[in-house]
Image (cartoon, rainbow, N blue to C red; front, side, top):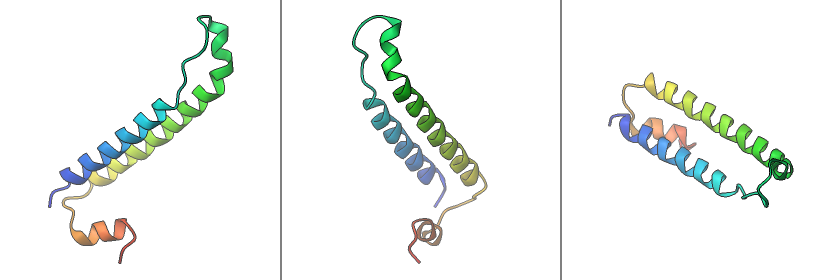
Amino acid sequence: MGKERIVAFSDGVVAIIITIMVLELKIPHGDKLTDLKDLILVFLSYFLSFTNIGLYWNNHHHLLYAVNRVNGTILAKAYGKN
């Protein structure tokens, strides 16, 4: 089987993870810039998490770029089943 299916699957998983992360962001109460001060740690943690997931996704694509095809043995080893 080609690698396109596993690349598409991993893209979908990353998109779902990022979507769930965004849903946890809350709307600030008020309309002033100082109202964002209370949420700066939440935004920082989201940014760091987004960066970490983006790095993982990028490395995963580079790994799959080196693969010509995927078979059952590779999938079993990837998911810890021998």
